[in-house]
Length: 319
Image (cartoon, rainbow, N blue to C red; front, side):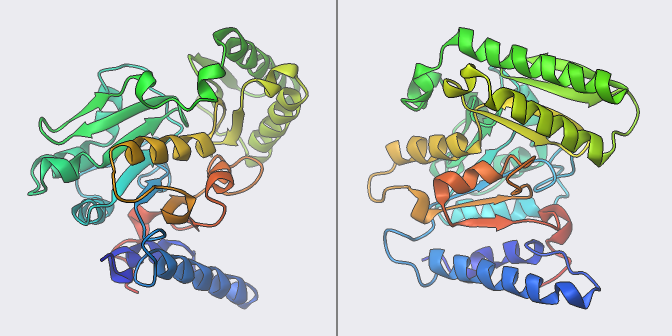
């Protein structure tokens, strides 16, 4: 059985303690709800609601923005421990690397991969780890037999609704998003560059810090423009503020979490993996500018909001 103590380390980062008394009630309430969620999914859960899958955001949740999961990151020990309990772990990240070798994701998750390679976990337990990049566009599984990330063919995991997407519509969506971001750069006089990827387009600063106001304005403008375009009826998208840049991705994390639920469920006979036994952990749950928000749509309730990143919180406070 999975006990609360096995996942209570998540609680140390669900709030960021503030010296202002006016926020104490809000923080207490958040901690209360977070505790209740973990109780419902662990010690006091039923067979159908016992925690089966935990999905994590990457940047700012597991590791610093744009950085890597280094071997000395205290989160790694807990992730390996969760895998040893038979849980499925998914890292759902906006970072999109279409290279089928998986070398870019292996580089950014080097500490976790090295730890698994040298762990005593069985190949079966190791294989309960998967990486879903570009929100919901690139799936890699960890092969516990050869200890490496492997590309999973789209035919094995694409949801039925995703199979209806047409490449022409995808490129139209990215064209509109690119034009919107370029217009923001021009209108606001920003020193920034637009970067186009196969399933995303972003606005990145040119060696200068973009203010939060400018980033939020770019998100608002892109969201508004795309929402009123006919292509939005065909292709779901996500506009978010990455803290130092802005991105518009094809798809979103509601699809990403659903993909992992379906993918892992296909290999699991006894218990269905669904919203009632899945937990998503992330730092961006604002309805505007936060890409973790869409995960709430598929789960409805089981989310932990990380304000103090896990890599900073774990080991700094016990609960």
